Image (tube, rainbow, N blue to C red; front, side, top):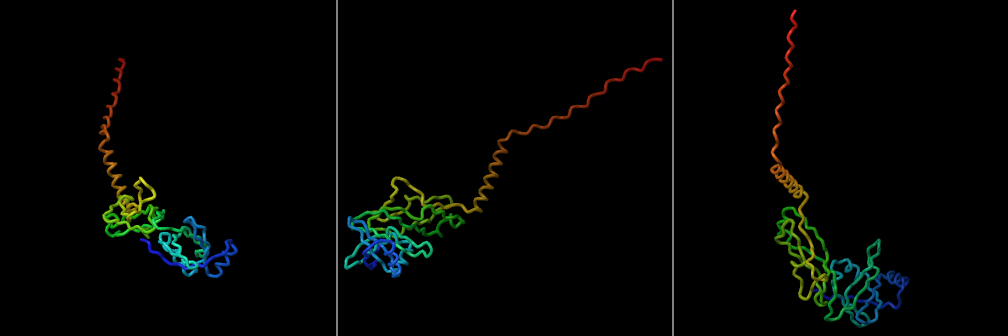
Length: 234
């Protein structure tokens, strides 16, 4: 379950690129709080308070309490703009969330007990199809990540959403489809060996079905020379 993280904010009176640049020069990050049928609020966050948090894998699943002018706003991060060169945050969007609200969240996935997967122990490769799951979650019960146990999975097995235990009240956004999250793929060496075995079996089967070869016909005897004509009498 997500825990609230507290952030202190300062108000921004005006929007615009010039004001945003001035805010960043003061080592603050421009941000906005919107939603909840209330007018948006422009704020500024201390760079040192937000910079490390935005690069966390769980940033978009973590609830924040932003204190501003004595009031507290419960919010969920929805978007972050990063500088193209430094990768530092230059703007953050927060959505107000109230008690009892259900919200769509992309939750990161982790795979546990990989050493207990026979397929991976044989050298198989965990092919991750979805690094995140789009889930509908109550705001009071947003998981920071979903742990998937791969114990017992063999080469060629697939991990579907139906095999994943989700927290109470949490369900996939995609309904009615047992989509694939990951597969245990064969390593290249094992694929080559299997391919060679398949080729040998196919050749043996083809040979067994082939008609028997017909023996070559014997060479015809050489034609006899015609009898010589009798010599003329003198």
